Image (cartoon, rainbow over all chains, first blue to last red; front, side, top):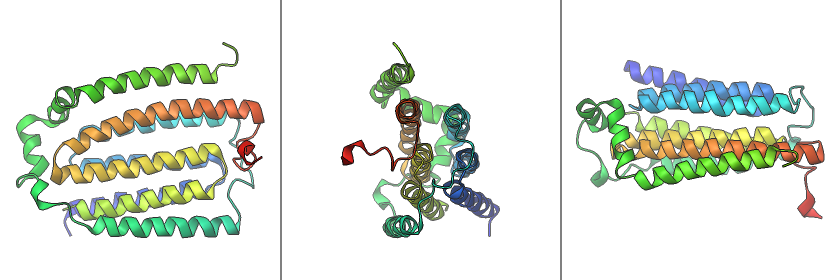
Length: 173
Length: 98
């Protein structure tokens, strides 16, 4: 087995294991910290899939910004102590397992379908483009020409989110 | 190639996210499970970008930006709910059930 595949399955196993711990821990803080572990493992998988720049962004944005925001709110609301009623009882567990199982089954069927050959990049794929243009330029250049309009719309969205969050979280305007 | 295994792993992670949303009562933990599902989809995009071109990686940028905005607004809403009801148990926040 090539070393990439060994690394891939190691990171994937840790990611799945910590995701499982994330949804079963009683304490919200423990859940958040296990989710951080999962996010780091997913960043490692991004590196193995030739997306080094996005792996850095994943750690900066998700583990750095979003999860800190989550932990901040959990601690602000003082939810760190474990409560017994957070996880649903046996009926809820059965329903969750059943529905998630059906969902997972459908996803596995989808995952087995190969992407159409006509759309595939020429041999070498992304690695060749990366070597020709550089790791960041390969992602940055389309972002500023083909995807310029969505990029600008994202900035408006972020501004709206800032204003919305301030208005919602403020007690008295 | 890593395409098949990546799709498998992201299917598992997405399923775990769905199970978490259905299993938990705490609004913040449910929100974290939604983030887990978003990450599973990001993994799919990046795995497919390896064979289908860089567009997949660019979509992940937008997903991350939207997820950051969603987290900020969502947590503000959760704060507002907690201030009104003094609980985050979603089974007790059931105004629409009458």
